[in-house]
Length: 150
Image 1 (cartoon, rainbow, N blue to C red):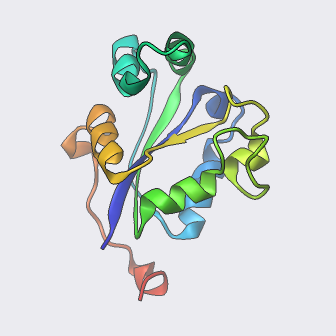
Image 2 (image 1 turned 180 degrees about the horizontal axis):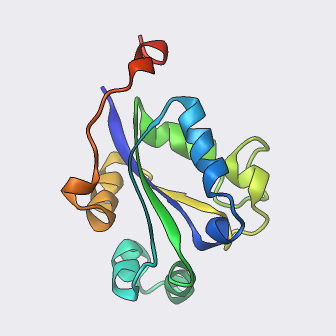
């Protein structure tokens, strides 16, 4: 069964011109991009997105950072998409992330780790609802899916 997750190229990834490279890695893996947009996250949306961190010492810096520049928001679809994307991204701290992962290849600091993705299907549903209206997620079939999935 195909699942969906939320992925965001953070402001540092956008500023460093890594959007195409990151999207390409997901596509080359066989994941489908079924929703895509660039946006400047307003403070209120950022606070909702990071709601679970409210009251923690780093909450304000998270909100300031994620609203500091444009981001690219994506909806990815595939089998075990949450786990696959998390594996491809690597550890939250880029210095601990394996080479070959997005963070391992492009990150140097935990506060500038290039990408975010949902950590569960429940988080994905919540985050997708925050960043995408139902009409912004596209249903389609690829002819090459028979070469990706049995």
